Image 1: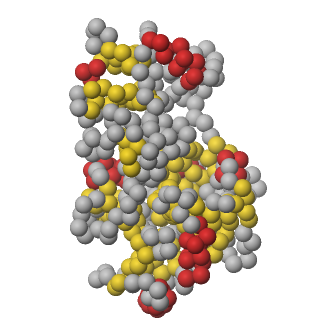
Image 2: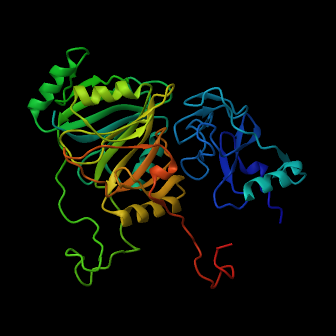
Image 3: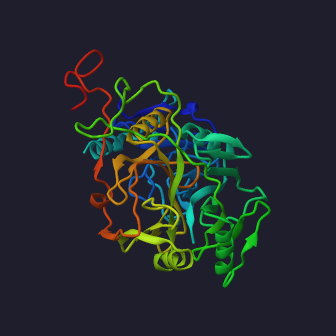
Length: 124
Length: 312
């Protein structure tokens, strides 16, 4: 089984998000968000507090309108497509993008060249 | 200034339904009008961020609109109104409370306390030799216990740009005492009408004004651990804990929330009177937690478990 498979691309609707634990550490470390049709993957780690998880509940990374990623630790708000923090305590900083690939069957994976590096990082 | 503690926190949120679900799952009781209460009637009020009835937003993404404190009597409300009226606007609201602002910019209110007295024991442990123990045949834990209820609004933690100035306001103008302090960070503050280690903790942060967390007291560590475990099982995102603080001794478990701050569950905070001498510690995990617990889902080899539990 491919450890860094995330989900089907069409499982994430517009303005929705979902968290994943592709490295099997027991909590989500990556999340997907669909914004203006495009899927974006970000590390589930707020730049405000090193590594702080961002959802307030499983898969709940966005504001009510689904237009901004929100860190539910201290309220920082991020653009879903650029990862830039545009309001809150870490304004001007950015989320870390995770490169993804969508295969011929419509399945989303962490990009192949990152698998070894990512796995090593999270399992350390 | 006999201020007895915080009685209501008012938030203007992006997603009222999410906030309502969160507070209900946390254990607060809906009291109507967007108010969610602990067993003693203290609580949180939630409204849409654009509700014109709310006090103005502070900016910077902070969703807290007002912190309402209880005081011993009407004379204390009048005394606070007179004191703050010397250098800032103080308004009398139709509900009998007064409204003003602290030196960091947080809107504050004061009312004659409506906190209902609680009675009954908290958590007891059967320590060998202890004169007070649970009665015979009274199990200490009930895994099937109904929803655990927070007892009382405990404290709030503000990020303030200038901790010294913010502290001076509460100490010199409102009669709070510093009970303990993290060096270079800020004080734990206790008002004159309670023995709780703190109702306010201030974190000096040059560019941030807002809320780090707020919390309610639960009946004991078992309630915090059981309620927190259920919260995690419902999908809520823990941030830090469970563990036990050193300053204040309170058991803690912190969670993310739709209030742009953490929300804690706490229990068994120290009580201090005027004879207490404040301690001062440098900030750091070693000085913030006496211990931190880690959960383990599979703790023994057996059906469905790896050969050695999940120790690997």
